Image 1 (cartoon, one colour):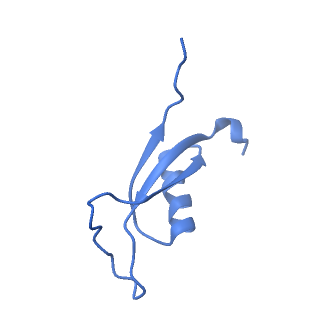
Image 2 (cartoon, helix red, strand yellow):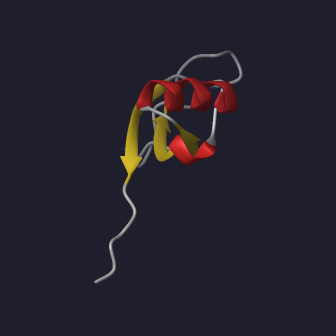
Length: 67
C-alpha cells in the first residue's frame, strides 16, 4: 500500500507492568506513540504491535494550514 494514502495518528496506550497488568498513570496522562496508517483501525493495530500494550485511543493528526 502506498504511503501517500497514510495519515498520521497519535495512539495513546495503557502501560503494563512486567506481569502484564495495566498500570495507572500517576499524572493521569497516557503515554502515546505516533504512527502512519491508512485509517484509525490500522493505526491502533500498528501501535499495539509497537508497544505490546492495550491502545486507549487513536487520534488523527491534521496538518496545519498556513495562510
